[in-house]
Image (cartoon, rainbow, N blue to C red; front, side, top):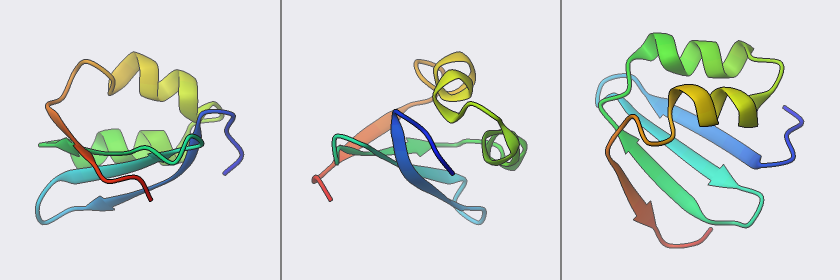
Length: 67
């Protein structure tokens, strides 16, 4: 999953939570994210571009402690 912005991400389908770890080691938890959005992020050729277009500023989030 090469990305110049996102180090890695994971999804909890039961809670609809998307956890994104950025290359800066900042960790964000995006809430109420549909599984379809997660699957499209996973399949996207450009994770950063998809994230900026379809996730950033679209879902409530919580900043977690750095990884």
